[in-house]
Length: 182
Image (cartoon, rainbow, N blue to C red; front, side):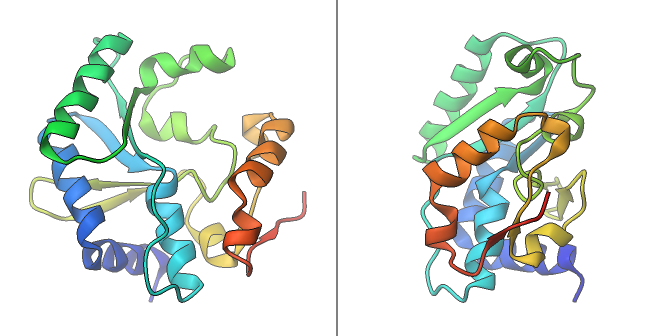
């Protein structure tokens, strides 16, 4: 089975992730996905044969709206999500997030996540009105199925990569993972 179809099936089989996708879709955002650990951890858990999901520290709602860039709106969207589904939400409009890294403005959610620190993290899932799930993966999905943690050279921040690997303890939690050669 191809990686995209496999991830979609795993998402559909995961009631917690499906609830999160339904809640995020209710916001009515145009260019959005649930990304980072939302997809990455699911794949790593399944590839390691874990019988239960690794708890998510947060659920990253990535969206792009160049007309409404204020952080206050994202906080309002987080509050709305918590009312609908009490989870640790993190909503970030990517139309302003380039400022954190002193980059040129992003063009879309996909463009924004293409700068994330690891290739395996730069994957998001979106639930459409017809209940179909699509994936956003600017680097494809193969890295997720290689049991690697791969530095994204486009992020241009090796120190952040190294710090994340240590702080998040990925290699300890998912022992089959290895750092990809740079």
